[in-house]
Amino acid sequence: MGGYLDVIGLTPVETTLVHWTEHVFDINIGLLDARDPDLNIKGIDLVISAGDAPNAAARQSGDRRAVIISLGLLRKLWRFLTAAAHHPDVLSRAHPLRDPGKSWKEALDGPLIAFDDWSMEAERAEYFVDILMQMFDYVISHELAHLLRRHIDLLFPDATPGFVDEAATYLDQAPGRSPELLPETLQDIEFDADANGLNQMLLSMDEKHPFLRGWTAEDGLEYGFQLAFAHILVMRALDTREGPVDRPGTEYPSPLFRAMNFTNLVFRSLHDLVPCDFEESVRVHDTAWFEASEISKDIGFGDGRWFGEGPSDADHEKFLVREARYFEATRRIDRILDGADNG
Image 1: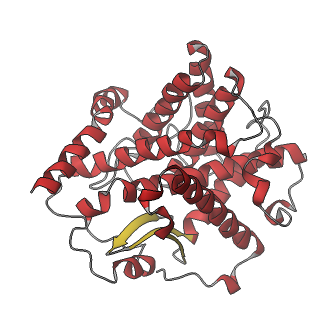
Image 2 (image 1 turned 30 degrees about the vertical axis):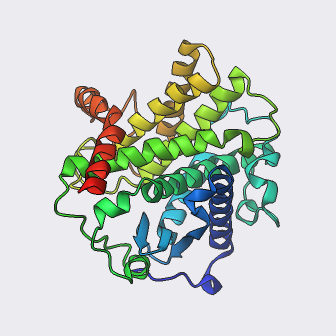
């Protein structure tokens, strides 16, 4: 069911995954604190839950704030990454950002235990380490955004003093959100966390890749590819419901629509930061989807669900209608928070 993780019983791979997750979390906390000490960001804890279900959550109770990630999610992200790394047609022509060993892995001590039995060139293995770091970065940035954007105040206004500990124990059984929030508002909150989490990631892109000393158009496109490819894999890990791939849940948007929206945001935002040819941005965006689609066949998704010419089970017209709403999600959440402040 869950509970706090006992690191003694972990496998070497699980130990490595937990260590890397802590590394990405610490980097994000350090960069956010340096940018704005008033956030009191160092007071946020990272909790790895022993739960088997692939879950992550942000929780707050009084002055205590925590990002909670289940070991089950780390295992599933690892399984998807492993499937990608060993697929001969996936990223066969990928080129990493210059000298990737100086980015995410710079502060990782010890050997890459999880990759000891991988029969592939070291450069390819290192590239997939970077992809895994981007997956962790998205999950952590999204959950931190829930805390920094005060979503928890809206979602759980009656949180008890033991709320964080309860969440670590029962993460597989997420508590119901405030009954006063409409399903559309709950979905707005998730899109707002995606947008603000991406903003955190892009604000820190220089610090996370200090060796670049200036971004070229090629570097920007490669970074966009990594962010998009990693995000699509995370959303597939969270696609655990039955029914149409584009159908939202009662509290969460469709993982497919989240991926479509997020990857669009990545390339729109990066184009403003690192100008490049628009058609080339579209090509790299589509390449990320195509490369990720190759993996879906190996990890059990049915025909048309996450792979093919496009996720053909999806209603694309429905996405275009909802995309207009997604763009306004942050403003709507701001208005709700302003109302709560003034109420």
